[in-house]
Image (cartoon, rainbow, N blue to C red; front, side):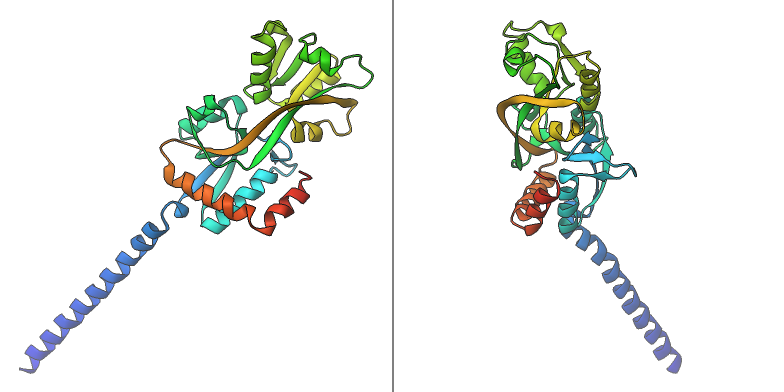
Length: 263
């Protein structure tokens, strides 16, 4: 009898241990499922030379208004993120090819882009500045009349505006629009006298020309709204980002970022 009781006791103990192990094993997946999208890792596509919104500093670290905002949202939502500088004219294809998971880099919401990606609620508005060399006879009227050679970044909304309003209207020949991989390259050509003007987003172009022998000719009011872009197949991620943006804009840190980056 004593042996029988011992065997029964061992069996009961084993059952209890297995039951306990089962509870432990199920708790982890449950917590991950509850957290949902926030527990995953995401690659954030940025423009590496888009001061003050997103850029890579001298130490190789991604920084800027959008980068800091994304870090804040990620911290609040429990998201793991890394930043990937990506060529601007290939950034939407990179998103669609799953090389990056979202774009947070001052991307203007346009109907053409909205056919390819889904956008968050707008978080910033910009217009277009036009700059030229100091001492030049070029005026903003000359630029708007299509009389000059103008440069900008390939795939940006300045290029879209020039194509629609100057080239397609017949005011300017197509060869007078010079496209570059990034705007600093366009500004370099402007300084060297190879083009007459550069058009680009106002906050960013002001940063790029600081300390250079260049000045702002004027501003073209386009009232472009910036949004975060995600794949159309990622509605859950979009909802998380929209909620994070709303929280951020209602937090004092938003104004701290505005002051920090002189927005």
